[in-house]
Amino acid sequence: MAVRWETVFVQNYGRLVRAAYVVDAGQDSSSRRWWRAHRLVRRALPLRSGRRVADDAEAGYRTLLARVLTRSLGRRFPWPGPLRRGAVPVVGPEHAALDRALAAVPPTVRAAYLLLLGEGMNRKGATAALQIVGAVDPYAAVNGALKVRDALDADHGLDAERQAELLDEPAMNPAAAEVRAPAPAMLRTARVGRGALATAAGVFALVGVATLATGAWSGGPEPLKVEPVRPVTDTEWRNNPNPVLAAWPSRGDARADTKLTSAAVTAWRTGKKLVIGPGAEGSPPVGVPQLLFAGHVDGRPVVVLADRSRLARYTEKGLELSPMPVLGTAGASGIRLAGTRYLLAPWIAKAQVATLGGAWQDLAAVDGVTDPVRPVPGSCYTGPLLRLTTKDVTAPSPLTLADLGQISLAHITVGDPHAARYLDTQGVWDRLGCQVTEWGTSAVVAVHAWEFATGALPGKAGTGTWVCLRGDLVGGDNLVRAVLLGPGGTATPVAHGTRLCSARGGPVAATAWWKAPSGSWYLLAAGAPGVDRIDMAVGTLKGSGKTYATLGPVPNQTPTMTVKARDAAGTDVPVLGVIGG
Image (cartoon, rainbow, N blue to C red; front, side, top):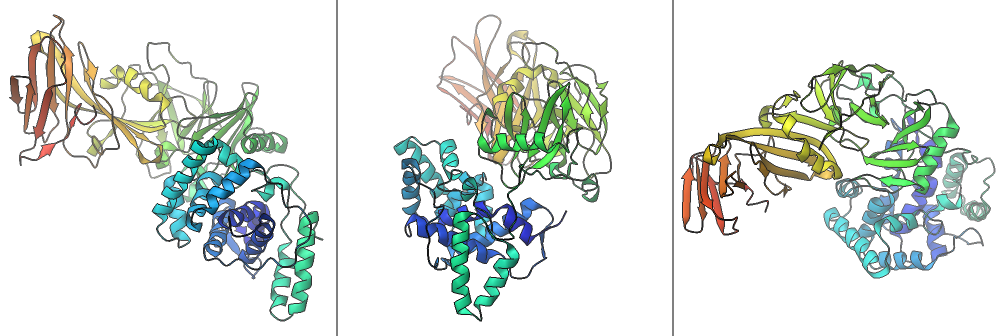
């Protein structure tokens, strides 16, 4: 639903003033900076009324924030006018340390710090936002802000979570002090009048400052009695050919219960009983949270909210944060709701459930809420797999999602990464459960298994299957390792931040030590299609092969080994187990 400038201005006035105040760090006394920030934010409101700023409140806030940061970085701070005693918050020693650290760096670094710690953006999002507002070298600004964060932790014992809290306290955040926005209509009238009546402008400034001190603009909007949430209608996803979680309609039998939804938002903003999942940031929500679900699950109240980068699930036990799925339709087709139930996207036509190695069974759902799914006890991965068939959207189907312990689910694929297939529970995946479980503590959004080579194990021990297992993480990082399946199976150390075993990666090889049933050790290596030669050496022993090679026996594992792989042109091919060690 389209929102107007006036709505965004009133709902986010305090946060916008905070942004101007933080970027102005060290320029003057706190009181003068405080009122100067108010004036700058008022001038960021366009003079023409009734215009649409964006299609939703969150996008509108980001647009108005960009206007405030542009003016702040351009040093377009108006003189604050006559000052009066009023609601300038008291600054404590921690706030003072934060303010001194920000005063010592350029304004662009302060803006980056605000975006990272105050707005909860990741590095990529903050860099993009700084580029939009015309900051010089936004990459350096973000790096500088991270150095400020780390220095405050090292020198003053203020970790990132505490720094984010400081930015939300009254000394840095006027919203916490319940400072209200001036009425947009009155503000515009005064600004137009200033162009012709300088004397009247002075009177207006006096009235404006005095009113901010007492918190009572005549005719201005009253503070909201409850924390707002942003509902979404059932029509939005139908108008998007590639829908994401932001298009989900608000569902649940209590979605109109403002007391329940307000309690969830308050818990997020205050951080009480907060559980922060891997890859998520514990800062308050950015803007008005989207309402995904509010209802009763197995007799207990549950609320699921979202901002631009996180999912939040509120229950009687507290609030849990998880990163927002980032892989489009696949990552946004299902989330873990509560207990053993899942909430499915409106574009899901059919749902099935299975465990690794088990058969698919139909899973019923009502208004997107599935029947309970009972995990099967096992030594490693016991969580269910969901196979979802989509309708009316542009996405491959069916999709396979795995519950790795977070609110969001991981997208699971198998096969050549250049032509990945959906997961069949039979086959190589039923022997990878332990490997997947190891990654449950990381912010995994997708896992891919590629069976790239097979070969006979030494001593007639059977056949070994080499699988490249890749996990893509929130924020663009990844985990990659090769796993040898078969008798005495083993795995290479994990490599980070690589294209290997992805659609953009080239040939790959892998090597690992393998212990035979006799107790002897062998060095094994295998290459994927595209590898033309493998050379190995352990001490004085040497061996080679085209795409598969073994070397041994040797009494023990030894670090003095070398393994090299090349393609047909003689170019080196990366070897997992060497680059990951």
